[in-house]
Length: 367
Image (cartoon, rainbow, N blue to C red; front, side):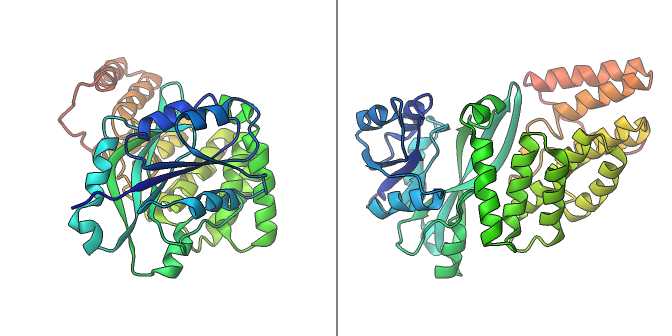
């Protein structure tokens, strides 16, 4: 069977620090590269042209969808792959993508989009994992919507309600969400401005409330962030399971940062009832109990997390939750309670797991 062709479509502006690595990671699977540049003043254009990209210079129109759709209009491949400049596909896995796209299951299950397994590098030693759609069949009716945090799935569902989204075991590393990079490019203020415009235009589209809460949290406007998280969760119509569970998680993180630990514990119960297999929620509840001086309840939550193990891929989960971080936190809690023997045991397990040693037994829930 002939392998399908792939068009890589990107939008960029002043991305000379990242673009070369991004393009290098997919250069052997992209049959064409289309770069929409919205006003770069550094070496971005030269890098794109060095990779043979079709560069389209387009004025910024306060809409990520407009820029993305401009690139899609030029694509000729069977499939369209889109990445941001601060993302890199795992080069050891990328070459199997085309073979995966030829499999019978893609056709038989009406797969119209593809998700990848993303690793978000947040800061030193901290990662978050989730699955993100980054491919779509090249159809004129599939186009992005929204000024910011643009989505293509709504247009896909309108055009083809019976379609499915597939998932491949290919990893993409995302490096641009560190605080330093967000401040450097003033992404946060830009996103807040676009989200406020979007909320005025579509006041009932609660996803924008969630995204605004995320941006406000990043600049530590915590009361406002909590307000928008609560607003989003009050009527979460149209939320995917990943987005809804992440909104619950971010509300707990915001309450923790505000020092509202009693509220944090209470809200965690609501969240865990909705997502009982989301390991991160148990860690956060344990943090609340630990801050309230309830070591026994914190220990119980952490043991629940260990029994669950790492969260399923449909969640946006922190690396180490349900594994070495649970052991580490058990060690910390036991130390705070004066039980140094148990503390040393769990901290040793945490160190072993962090360094790659597999722990095979399961923690009992009984205290």
